[in-house]
Amino acid sequence: SNVLTLTNDNFEQALTEHSLLFVKFFTPWCGYCQALEPEYENAAVALENATVTLAQVDCQEQEDLCLENDVQGFPTLTLFRQGLPSVYTGPRESEPIVQYVQRQMLPVVSNLTDAWQDDLDAFIQGDQVVIVGQGSADDYAHFHTLANDLRDEYRFAWQDRASPFSLVLHRPHDDYQAKLDVPTDVDGSATADAPLTWIRRHASPLFGPIGPDNYMDYEVAKLPLAYLFVESLDQLAPFETGLNQLARTHRGKMNFVYIDAVQYPEQADYLGLTTGTPDDASDDQEDETTKTTDTKSPLWPAFVIQTPEAQRFVFNQSESLTWPLVEQYVDQFLAGALTPFLLSDPVPAEPLDGAVQVVVGSQFHELVTRAEQPVLFEVYAPWCGHCKALAPVYARLAEVIQNNSVALTVAKMDGTTNDLPHDLPFDLPIDGYPTVAYIQHDKVSDAYHVGLYEGDRSLADLLRFVEQQPQAPTIP
Image (cartoon, rainbow, N blue to C red; front, side, top):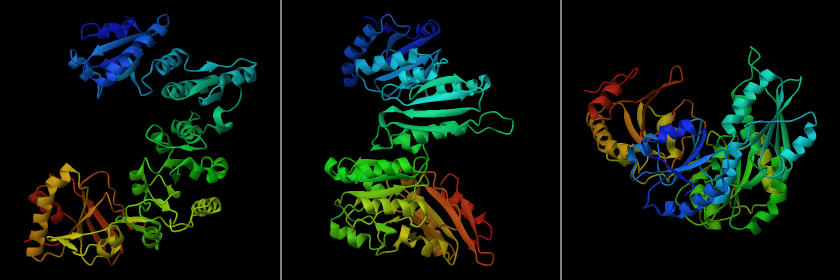
């Protein structure tokens, strides 16, 4: 075998002896590992004379070693460069593995000669995004750090120039290029985050499919993302040319993608699309800014824009979607002329669950923002174990408040099927489930006090939290 077997006894030595070590962490019983085995052997043969060593660790026999290397599943492929790990997430076939490893053997940055345009034309052949840096020797140090962090995703080249530090990004597959004059701090050094953010925003395709493999590329760009939901390529065709041009026009302001509505119905639900019949869509989106979650069949194509702050702008599905309407909708969005829609369960027939007030998105302002008395407000998820553990304690708290006629509303809202309104007059961060907050409106100053609960979720601690709030009601 051309694959080196590693154990607890020789692992550290291998890291020291091999500056580039590609390791397969596996178990013999894992079906995916069994399928990978011949591919990995073929890759090792292809790379036999390369300056990289392919190795493997049997995690059934070397359990502690795998735990030390944070192996979460099997197989895990990790490249160690000078002992520092980087997990490989690409295809599990020999050819892409070989291509990945060969890229890792190349210099982080390729230096362009004086005939740099000829060099560049050769360098940008293929589909991979290329970033060319230009500037002084001092600027090169910043560029090299950036390139090293992103070497798995893009190719980097450098040209020495007596000019301010700049980056030029080339996307060969759609003939796109963009330039950034790198901003500097007060002391003149390059601003660390600006180039990274800019690359993320410009490296993605102008218009293309989105799925699990590339979703994070758009997430880290921190730009509004426009989704076209389609059931087939035939539905995509009338929009493709226009959306490509629109994406080019608004590059750096927002991104555009299409998504398979049949394969990813949960994403359609999450973004607020009606999953009912055309008649259901008309009824459900009569008010375009609010959508209830009780309809269940598809209507495509459909168009949604989501902001980095998770606001969603849903084109009314009761209208037939056409290219001119999409173009108009994007213009209205960029002009700030649209109102975000609000995900909301239907208003419950029974407003109380025991002594707890049930709140839905469409009633939040009525029951919380404009409440006559303070509100203890929980945002929960039905699947959340901590929420399930808190539920009987929270219900008991509500009974104590009710039985003692305390001027406090104890309320809850399902955060998975309801949004908080986009125009809240106070900050209410929902960083996890459950989130419990004490919300009180001072009508004299028109100011809000919001206290976030961080206790042990016991009845005594919840009562103590309430009593510690400014102007809190007295609990006997």
